[in-house]
Image (cartoon, rainbow, N blue to C red):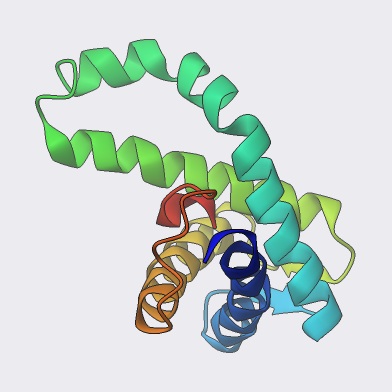
Length: 137
């Protein structure tokens, strides 16, 4: 599927963002254009910032998870990165707002991550090797 599948994920993720905005988490979107710009931004930020964020969080992650032996702690650090990317995208995109600040970022990012992973898998776009896992967006 390659590049086409990767590009098809953005409108799907934009629709997921619109769905998340309907949920009572305090995520607000001005419309599909804002959702599409936000989905693209989350994806690009994930691509650009995943390694620096993992580098910054490496020591706390290694200590808290005993070097990856405690999987739930590792997953929590992945969720933390997703929340950071979600909040950063909201601060960069006009029309994408987190009404309740950090609480909206946490619940919105988790919902966005889980729902988009399900939709992407159901639509058969999950085998795209260009993007990172559900935590990217």
